[in-house]
Image (tube, rainbow, N blue to C red; front, side, top):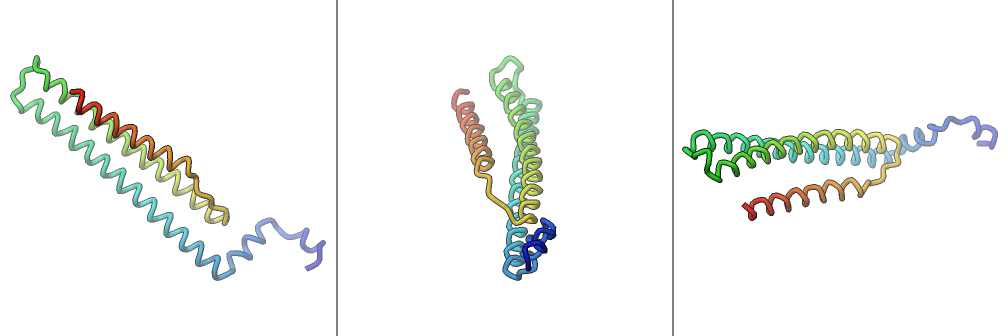
Length: 144
């Protein structure tokens, strides 16, 4: 192909040519499937957080109402705090779901453009937030 003919090519022609390559198609299919598996793992984690949060919330309400505790007793205050922790876990689960959808769509577009690069900062932020919340939970358990 001559230089003038190359200048008239569309910008997406290189990507279209690359997509016709069988090894690139195999790579893209593999990447799409990996992206879906990762998305489903995030959704499972979010559903687990939501389920556990609802369970903790409902169980603390049950104990407060049917446990025969006097309102002036200290354990009732702990159960109210536990109820709030359950609600916090539900909210965190929904945040994980929103993050999962955002990440899935972003990675899907990058795979389509053949320029996917992992974003380690998001993984590190997600891990550090989980560690931070876990440490706060441990501190809360032992301080009570």
